[in-house]
Image (tube, rainbow, N blue to C red):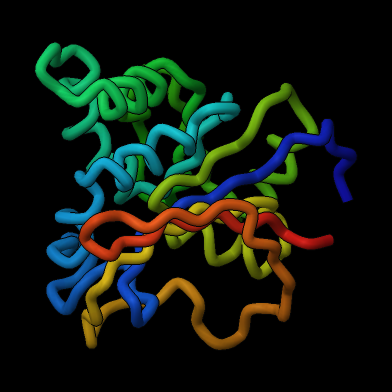
Length: 199
């Protein structure tokens, strides 16, 4: 196993009450999530994610979606300051995009890596300092959970049942124990939860 510098691996995902991160329309169907992500609680949740993070790890889909959405927000004086703060952080931070198909980095300060998520994160843990944040990239979060490499989980749970759609916590993950270190409820019934891995 690679020696580490003590860097913490954090992961964030928004989920419906039945544990789904998108609806029946596929990965782009975030209709159950978006109304809650833009509440005060949702924006406070977003602001917490990058407080100590110095590296962002993204899947191809998230990277391409983020690239089209977040950079203009960083320069928008009318945007919510919490959104603008996250956008500025994301534009400026070191980004690692895991992809088997991309050949060109979609952003500045970005490198493309075609390797298993656990292997990439183990290497990142051996270098530098600050948290490694995996934001809204379930294709990376799942294998990291399987390898027991996630130290903190940020979850925004919304009060809707999607009924159909992909789940983060599928059968086959190893049994692990987590400590709830923060919880807040929003006015629409959304929950911001922070869990730390109990090791």
